[in-house]
Image (cartoon, rainbow over all chains, first blue to last red; front, top):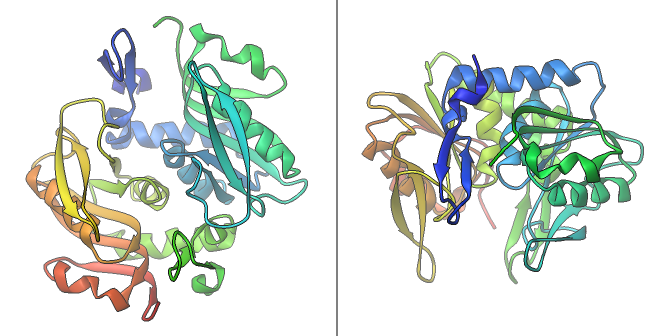
Length: 173
Length: 173
């Protein structure tokens, strides 16, 4: 099962010139979805993960399945205004303007071993902001995991202090 | 493990007079999260589920873990504009105005056995729209599953043709 063959390439989405890597065709394929989670579990099963953090909203999919299989808790990092209780926020740069993400203050305890997950690693801005949130709460970041990495955007340059694992890599647009 | 004791009640969120049932305190608790998924799996493990459909975005969490354990594919139903390929849409009524959800046209094949999942069953408007999407694609709905049901809103009245399973029920606000 070559996972990359189950990704759908959608030209000009969400805008002209971008090839969108659509993971829904992987997720709906039960063998591919199973393989995706198994490969992640294989990598982290001996790491004593306490919490898997998933980034809204596609990061919830792999993150939740991983948390279950690793017998960890699951923590969502969300867009502003979605989390109801006491929380902290991190802003990050977009191509034009800024965006922000939030996490509940009680989501992670000091010294807990945390695995972060998102579907896509592009420029790395979102995951870097997520790492700052986890570290602000005292969590120890064991790794950053992604289904897809757009390696031609060179996201690892700004994430050099972290262990990064991705299953599918694209080295050109 | 009484799951209901792990839910956080947040008064006046998202607006005055509403008690928000915050599931993040359940999800981050590894025993509670595990129990949540196990109870769901116990109910559906002999139902030969082909696809688990999760409703954006908290429905992705339980839905994805369920799909993995049931060896099914996972299908997201999303807010408008998020899915990149050919899709169908269903509108539904809100208290004021309307909202809509979408599914990829190729997400479900004719005759496939489908389990729908969302975190919360309130008035039932969203899940009813989701059922219409699945049925329009020819899927057979095996069941509707929820972590929480607000039974005082009587959602089962309008969903009487479906099998409904929820783990936590609130019979008053």
